[in-house]
Amino acid sequence: MSSYADEDPGSFPRGFGYGPDENDTDIQAVATEQKPRILLMGLPRSGKSSIQKVVFHKVSPNETLFLESTNKIVKEDISNSSFVQFQIWDLPGQFNPMDANFDPENIFGGCGAIIFVIDAQDEYMNALTKLHTTVAKAFKINPDIKFEVFIHKVDGLSDDHKIEAQRDIHQRASDNLTDEGLENLRLSFYLTSIYDHSIFEAFSKVVQKLIPQLSVLENLLNILTTHSGIEKAFLFDVVSKIYIATDISPVDMQSYELCCDMIDVVNDVSYIYGKDHSKGSCGILSRQDSTATKEDGAFDSQSASTIKLNNGTILYLREVNRYLALVCILREDSFDKQGVIDYNFLCFRQAIQEVFEVRQRGQLVSSGDFIQQPNGIIK
Image (cartoon, rainbow, N blue to C red; front, side, top):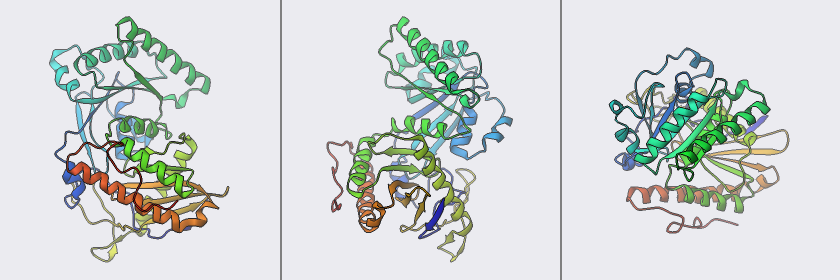
C-alpha cells in the first residue's frame, strides 16, 4: 500500500470522543430529540461490555480481558454531529426481564433495539432460554423494537463451526418464538468478534435501522457512485468506524476493512501532523470523556486523503462534516476524472447539509419528499 496524495493532514484527530460540541449547531439542533435506546443484553461474561469498549472507546481487544462483570445498568449517551445519535444501556447478565424490580416497562418502553449477545464458545442453551424470555416480554411492551442477536466470540471457531452454530441458534430461537405464537417476529443474527471488523459491521447494521434518514442517504450515495465512476462508497462515523449508509452494491467485508484501515491511517497522521488553526501550532482534539475540555482540533473543509493500492484500486476519503467522512473505492482509470468526482462530492455534501436542515426544522424526511438528485451533479 502506498499513499501518493494527502491534501491536508489536519483531520480526524485520534483523541476524538463523544459528547456535544458547544460550537456545533448540528448537534445543538438535535440535542433535544428523543434518542433511540440500544440495550446490550446477554448472560454474564458473554462479551457485552467488551463490545461497547472496543467500538465506542477504542479500547484494545486484549485490554477487555481485564474488565469486571457488569453488576448494574450502565448508561452511555452517544452523541456527535453526525446521524449517530442514541443511548447504549449495558444491562447486567443477571437481569431478569420478568423481575418487576428492574421496571421492564420503562426499560423496554423507550427502546429502539435490543442486542442480545450469545457466547458461541460456551454452551448456549441457557442463553437461548433467556433470549426467548427477553424477546417475548419486550415485544409485548414495545412491538417496534428491533431484535439483534450477536453470536459472539466466533474468532476461536472454525468456519464450519461458525456456520453450524449460527444455523443451530437461528433454528432454536425461531422454534421458540413459533411455540410462543410470535412467528412473525423477526430476529437478525450476526457472527461477531472484537478481534476483527465483524463487530463494527454488525453494529453498523443495527445503527442504520435507527436512522430515519437512511433511505435518503442511500439514495444520495447511489447517485454519487453512478455518476462518478465509484465502485463502492461508505458514509462513516469516523469516531466509531460505524458506516451509517452505503450504496446499493453489496458490502464486501474486505472492502469495508480497507476503508476502516484508511480512517485509522488518517487518524494517526492527523495525530502527529494536525494543525491547531486557532493557535497556528500543532494540536489535537482531546476528549477523554463527554465532560472534558475541548480544544479546537485540526480540521479543514478541504481535508482529503488518497491511497493507491498495488492492484490499481484507489481509496479516496473526503470529510463531510466534523464527524462524518465519505470513503470511496474506485479504479485508477476512473480517478483520472478527479475534478468531476470532487465537484460531485461538493454537491453530495451540500445535500447532506440539507438533510440536517430538514432535521433541524423537525420535518419528516423520506426518499419521497426529499431531494432525489443533488443539484448540479455532473454525469
